[in-house]
Each structure stands twice: as structure tokens, then as C-alpha cells.
Length: 118
Image 1 (tube, rainbow, N blue to C red):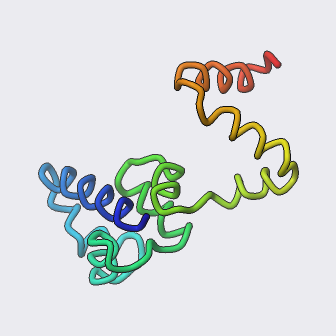
Image 2: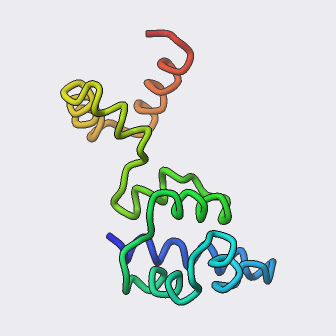
């Protein structure tokens, strides 16, 4: 799991660095509050991804969705964990039922919930 996370982060950071030198390992690490050697090891899959807070900060730096980076790191955000803990059976059933659904069907459900059409 950490290898997929590291590869994704490295590719995204390097793509940004092609246009802006501010996306070196050293500079990104400094902005999110970790050592450059640690971020480098994470990118190579040699160490586990950082904490939720550091992943969220990294997502912000890389202009990525924090939930995507958290999922790649094998983690779930604390606000989603809290929601799941309140109704674990319902969320487990919902996620299992949605697992095989095509993206357009899931997006339709999301829009209906967001728009209050339920």
C-alpha cells in the first residue's frame, strides 16, 4: 500500500517540479513539516506513509484530494471514521453494495444525497 502512495506522491511532485522548482523534495518536506529524507523514503516506499495531518498537508501542497492520498496510504480520514462509527452496519452495507456499481451510478447517489433528494 505504501508503495502506491509513494509512487503517486513522487509522480505528482515531480510533475509540479517541472514547472516550479519549489516542488523539490527538500522544499515540499519543509512546507509540510517533515525531514526531506523521510519524504524521500516515503516516495520510494521504504517507510510507511506519514500521519493523517501530514498527508492532508501534502495533499494541499500537491493540489490533490486528501481523501485520495489517504486511501492510497491505506487510511481513512478521522471525520469519515467518526461517521462510520455512528452507524457501522449501515455504512458497511452501503459501501459493499456500491462496490460493484459503475462510477456514474455512485455519482448520481452522491448528487442526490448532496441535493437532499432522498
